[in-house]
Length: 174
Image (tube, rainbow, N blue to C red; front, side, top):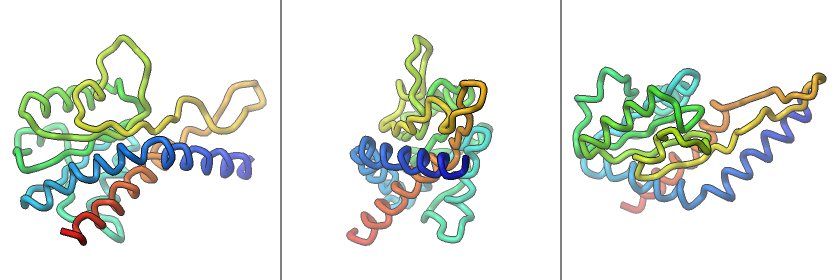
């Protein structure tokens, strides 16, 4: 089962790289603006997606000017700051509330989430850039005919590293 999972995970990473490269580059440029203007890059992660925020702020190679964002800190975010919202699905209510507050304040932000086709509001409706994690079903077939294995945080960390590497390149050129 682990071999199937690894194969499918590699396929997911390839899909993100091939289909979201332009969004990753646009998102990196947007986030780099905060660093260049002495702002912060705030990262909010819903549920297990806090892994991305912790990696960016406290990992072995932290993202420059990165800080973890919690929902009660929104008022401290200023116009020179940028925000990365990370959630499983684009319709996540907590992330949607934050997205609306950021939009009201005129704060630029990007999202990492699996885009949901729905008539509900979505964080993608408010974001400057949205990166689709494309994790709509489990990666591994189960014995009962369903699917298991939803590595949302792994997909988000993969996209985050795409952003980080691109930001580092932009800053090196700057």
